[in-house]
Amino acid sequence: MQIKLWGVRGSLPSPMMPSEIEGRVRECITEFLRRGNKSPDQVDEFLRSLTPEKWGGYGGNTACIQVSTPKETVLIDGGSGLRRAGEALSDGPLGRGQGEAHLFFTHFHWDHLIGLPFFTPLFIPGNQIHFYAVQDDLEQAIRTLFKKPYFPVPFERLGAELFFHKLEPRTPRRLGTLSLTPYWLDHPDPCWGYKIQSENKTFSYCVDTECTRSSAADLGADLPLYQGVDLMVFDAQYTILDAAERVNWGHAAAAFGLDIAMREGIKRVYFVHHDPAASDARIAEAETQARDYYLSQVQTSKSTGRKLHEVEWSFAQEGALLKL
Ligand SMILES: [Zn+2]
Ligand SMILES: [Zn+2]
Image (cartoon, rainbow, N blue to C red; front, side, top):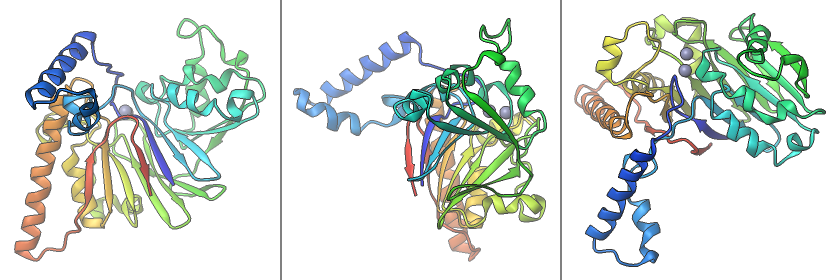
């Protein structure tokens, strides 16, 4: 299974302003020279040595990921990252009106839908586009996007053939070798994360969630979302302090996901849904804070004998390709 992160920003697309890019380029050139580099041959190694906040940043597009196996491809959420996903998929049968796309939705907040009108396979006759969600109002939510005065092309004029599929909570939906099971997340409007399994690999997508339920007892029927998981993508919009101040805003801090991952033995975690108001430097600070928290927990578990699993994790950048 491969997971491509087309959008990792939360709530609102947040591209860098030209003045920010100019400042970033200036700092990079200055640092390149300060280290005594002189040749263009040294550029690649220099760039590889820089962290995201020093160079390309974390990315500005909102929620969209692509899960692929050799036989199947599904997309989860249609945030602004979906536009580039559509462009990439259009190199294949979807670009010729001979393809199928499968789009699963966690919920219908704008940051998870806004890319859909720019998903070009929708406009090509011959394509079959399947939409999936637990929510009863799936079709209504999609129809509303293609309506004047919000968008010039009405729903009835979309070229592709559209299908709407209702998912049952905590019940696997099979698609070839893939199985996708929705579990309830903690968010102000109904929101469902997905546990995705293919052959012997398991991936969990846990966005958007405030993670108000974190103990095994509180999670109850939704605990399996975090069990037997090889790789998890988790909401880390806030620092711990932000999360404490923003009760009921629907988002978590990385520490909350780390607690669950360490307890349940999740092997790898990538944190997404970065705060649209946060600079890359601030996101990097949040990652440092999470690192301090994680190391303190590991240390405590060693000194007290409390069993915690070590986890490989980082904050994710847009465009990352995760393999498992
Ligand atoms: Zn969101
Ligand atoms: Zn949301």
